[in-house]
Amino acid sequence: MSRFSEIIKQDKPVLVDFFAEWCGPCKMMGPILKEVKDSLGESVSIIKIDVDKNQELASQLNVKGVPTLILYKSGKQIWRQSGVVQKSDLLQIIKRDN
Image (cartoon, rainbow, N blue to C red):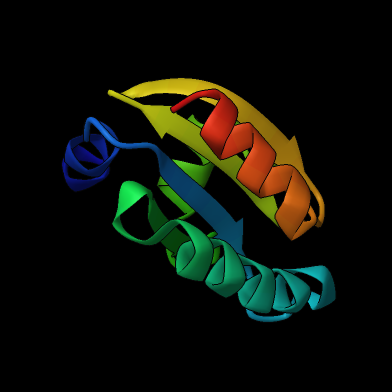
């Protein structure tokens, strides 16, 4: 958890994708997140966290379903949504809060 806390305290937005290997919709998020990263470059960090390998963290953050995306800025959660989110929506959300 301490490493996670350090990662989300960055000045730039940090988008966290909670996923599972067995989850179909999670597999759809991979290419979308790549396109978002390609569009925004170094202005955003995107990290993927496997809920099966990080059950304690997922539990602490009340992640009940996958995929769950959480956007952090300076350690604070500023947006959260479960399910597949389209590239255009993610870009708008990240830019709005940046």
